[in-house]
Amino acid sequence: MSAAANEPILHERREGWHRITLNRPEKLNSFNEAQHLALRAALDEAAADATCRAVLVTGAGRGFCAGQDLGDRDPARLDDSLDLGHTIETFYNPLIRQIRGLDMPVICAVNGVAAGAGANIALACDIVLAARSAKFIQAFSKIGLVPDSGGTWFLPRLIGEARAKALALTGEAISAEQAADWGLIWRVTDDETLMEEAEALAERLSRGPTFAYGLIKQAIQAASSNTLDEQLDLERDLQRQAGRSDDYREGVAAFLEKRAATFTGRAKR
Ligand code: LHQ
Image (tube, rainbow, N blue to C red):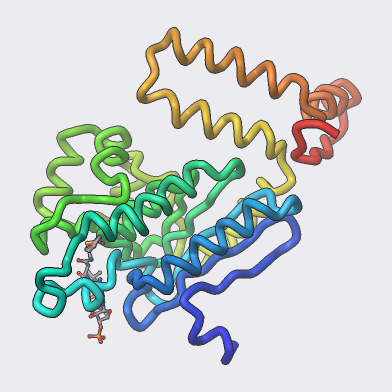
């Protein structure tokens, strides 16, 4: 653990899935450039690993992620060279696109406070579990900024405009339970069981029909900007692909033979 103590990201390759842990606990895992680059590299590696069929993202220590490391983007120090648009374009936007574009489930285990971009990175993941003591804070307005990392897109879609605006304008924290009640996240767990439940979910999904999971993700993500007609066409096209996969063949055979399916996750042999 000593060598890993200074790494901004811990990357564990488990059988069938990867666990990626944000690892700057003394700064509540807020992002500096090294952490951004290491996270991107870890996600790239998961995507390129044919045996990896799910990713679990979490944070070390008592927080999940407090967004940008504000010490690194201090206007008093950077003055004229400060261009937050460049930071967003270079680091945050590619990260959100990478998470949404990964064609396998990305689970987020929010182990503690998720603030600013940290909250919205969690919301970009496919299934979000949170420890009961965790909080979600759209902290941006407290420092004169606008929600980023997809926050202004995710929030109104997940919880409606009224709640999205109130959270973003006031910067007030909401509890994990409130977040789950509103449909901002999937589920709250006891603090002690968060990792056990998140890992069990990653393990379970890693044995699923990964190719179909990627298509499901693609379809649901497309829905909010498609008309019903467009979405019906998309479902037809994706179902055509899923129907030719090994896993569909296996899924139907297993059903008819009254046994558990053994999915490979592949589109085709
Ligand atoms: C931190 C941070 C932090 C550095 C805690 N930075 N040290 C994109 C583009 C470019 C620039 C700007 O931003 C963005 C996107 C964004 O994410 S903007 C939003 C940035 N984040 C925030 O505004 C949240 C700032 N943090 C907080 O409000 C609190 O720390 C929260 C509410 C998250 C947690 O409060 P506490 O549980 O009371 O913990 P704490 O405040 O005592 O923090 C613990 C330590 O972590 C502390 O260091 P210290 O040396 O005093 O023990 C904090 O300074 C440090 N820390 N967040 N973002």
